[in-house]
Length: 264
Image (tube, rainbow, N blue to C red; front, side, top):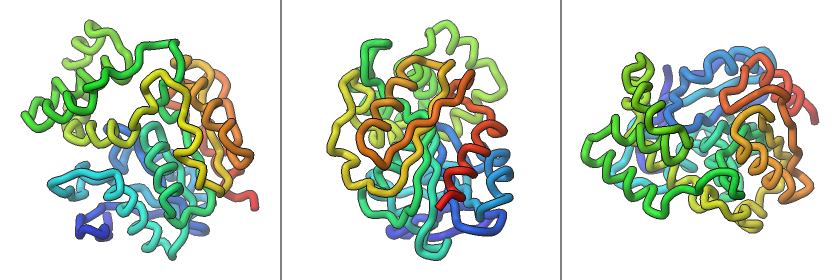
């Protein structure tokens, strides 16, 4: 593990492997740098791959007040370490963070995203209006198990009885360990889980090539949202992975990413 310092002095922990052009992997909710280990290993055959703990997770630090811009600056610090520019892959809410970073001027040359968890139709209920506020309250109270449960029911859409059973599973403790950052992902998503069409101007400054990936076997709103995103501009291209859900097989994802990132 190595570290860089973000603009506000926060320590951001990262790991690096491979050789070639720099590629930073941005995880979604609950994900620490180890969650992308298999994908990183596959991509490292062609790129210098950087995985990192987003602020508030794993070995990275945090600041008292959260702002999406701080996470953009975290990514900027990694890009600066990598030589001043990099390619980026974002997963789930990490995809939206990556889009936001590019829109705000981060030195990203190519961007790939997989299933940003938009809700843009009526295929499932939108997030409650007080979703982020309630998550924040639970996190501030230290009720991390309840925060995870609320995320899994309100955001993911799982039945409450299924989530109750999950609380006994070994992986639940790992989710609780990063639950205090769930409000961060909520702020990153903004109003893109409201059941309304995507805003056409939020990412209009993203002019680099963008690959938008989605499976066709998961929650219907994922593919719908990916299609909407890919339709925003000519530099956005949709790639559908047959038979895949939100937890896509890295062995299937890696070749598509390699082709995209190594094509001039």
